Image (cartoon, rainbow, N blue to C red; front, side, top):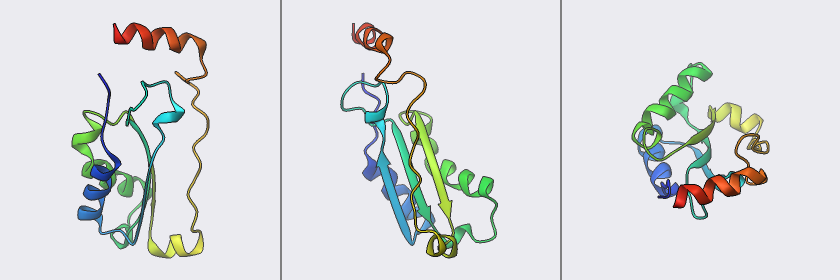
Length: 119
């Protein structure tokens, strides 16, 4: 069974709730040891005026609360960058995820584990 949530679902929920000035949703599932076609590992960059005056922790909580249903079912990993418009204008960059260290698709034992999971 594939874990799957389309990035369009993530984009729609974040847009509706946080009214971002800029939003990027990147599916990073291909970087992990998951079955082909999985949509379970994401990175989001959310730039919203609603983040003004909030700590980084409070911003992340807002994003997590918005995606609560998906996080409890089909999103396995979510990397969050939450910026105010002012922060974005002074540093308009998206962080790059490091290589997967656990369960990487480059881990030879994962091939067997994935095959076993399909049986």
